[in-house]
Length: 364
Image (cartoon, rainbow, N blue to C red; front, side, top):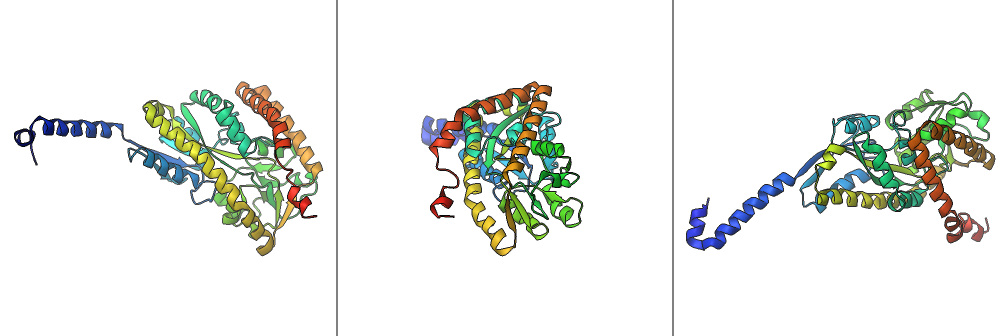
């Protein structure tokens, strides 16, 4: 190896300075490197729902020049998908990509950030989180749990559920064993449904064996992968319980505070890009899969009757009022979301063509 003395003899002070500068830079670079675990709430193979996370990890690696790595771990490899919040909070894992809401028992407001029945649609949720203070509000609430939550993905409405019969009255739900998550599950309980929260990997078998009578889970692309259409032929829409499904990069707050400003900016930027990527992917794929359900798999797409939606809205109002009364943070977040939704209403109704416009033009 060429020594500094040799370089000084043949190349003078310039060579010495260059070598020393390189040594210092390499040392600083090594100190700045971030190698984190990122555990998943859902398998990354689930199209549109969870494949954004590896993409975000790739962007972080590229933007940092390889100095920041988020190593993706599938659910169960480090912790279960429903345990991401606790694991990150306690520092058992560095970070996790997950839907907000599994922690509703200890942090009720989390469910609002995950999805709100009859609430904010993807574009509205993006506006609320990134332009109307939602991200800052979430950071304040999660700081008490030692977590930095970065808004990192949003997808189109989930379906209202797979049933073995068409839902024509909510009386049919009474006594049913049904898989539902978050605040939508709270609403279904008010309908006297027996609500359970099973992971996606267990749902097909549970439906097939009659452990549950019906289920909701996600988008058509995801529901197709899980094979629900093979055991339940009535697919109910719209996704009243989750007009948008929102995911976050949970980062242990001590780890976050150990980053410099540039590193934090890379993570924030990658997650904003993740939001755009996820909603584009979600919207771009669902139409074709829904047509496949109907045309190839014999599925009947059921549009929930307006009286059912009105009753669900009434029960939703009750749930929101009850949670707001019990939890100050929930009340604060729900109030802010509701105020934004009201402010945005005129633009949403007047600025865009009616959703049934294509049908009217076609004379249907």
